[in-house]
Amino acid sequence: MKIVPRSLLVLVLLLCVWCAQGADADYGLDWNALLSDPDPAELMRLAEQYERARGVRRDYSRARQLYCAAARLDYLPAQIRLAWMYANGLGAPQDKELAGAWLQVAASKDDLQARKFLVLLGDLAGNRQPRCTYESRYDEYAIATIPSPDGKLDNFNLSDHLAADPDRRQITQWVRQLAPRYGLDSNLVLAIIATESNFNTGARSAKNARGLMQLIPQTAARFGVRDVFNPIQNLHGGMAYLRWLLDRFDGDLGLALAGYNAGEGAVDEYTGIPPYPETRDYVRKVIRTYGRRTAPVEKLVAPPVSYPVNLKH
Image (tube, rainbow, N blue to C red; front, side):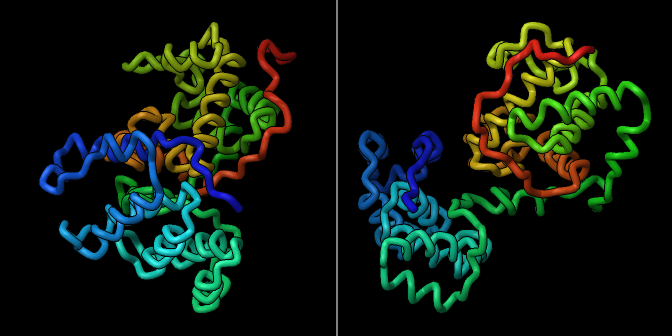
């Protein structure tokens, strides 16, 4: 299994933020040169400096970020070291399953060290995919840190909510027809609609988001929606954007929802769910309504059918 990044955008943004903050000015690091032609061995060397406090302040979190960048470039030593950090809780919450996932990648290259390490951990990787967690609020850790206003994650009965009136039942029928075309779980889409507009096809927010899935004009244009108040077109646009976000963030539901609310640029900037109260509350509400912390996403075998489709409204 070869780990190749979909894009180096996250790495670029991450390192540019560090550079802008001036955190490494006293270390003489040339981030522009580093980014011009990313070298996993150089990333590994820098990571070791931060991990072992060689000429810099010890910073496990930054070391892990650099190891991860090298690991995503399919650099075996970095994959093993990253697994070690996750297994021991260095720079992130301890996660032996995630450590095992990275070790399985390394072991697939017949690396003896990785195989021995896997034996020590046991079969912990399961179906986990090797990924990076940059902060305690990132990925699967994000949801656990988002409390509800009353401190509870109470259950929300989506079925009862949908049965409340005929309009919601009609919208539900459309969603169940369209969602599979985007490889999405219809219940997730319904949870977003309930949170975004409460099934009001004419909803308009103070930020000029419109319709069932609250598309702003830029997003509507981006996904070819001509009439945002047309419920079928709005659903197509919202589902296309949600699917794009899930693909972009490797199926991470928390990050995709944060991107839907605050924009993918904000997720990149904070390398995780942004610390905006509105966004954190939004992610919590959708997941509470959906009733799950992960989203099953089917791989598309063909492009989604574009509107207009044979659905009446």
